[in-house]
Length: 54
Image (cartoon, rainbow, N blue to C red; front, side):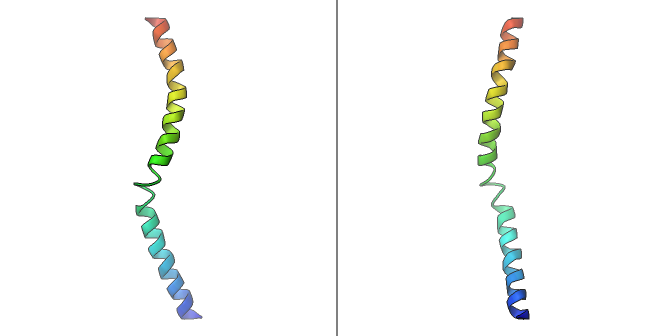
């Protein structure tokens, strides 16, 4: 049992390390797209205000 737990802990640590390194390059695009979508929605109002000023 102890060996299994230790092995599992190592697997979890390895998975965590891999996940920590993967989320940066992989999950970055997903959240970026969502952020871009939000930025696009926030851009129209900003552009509108700038156009009004111009």
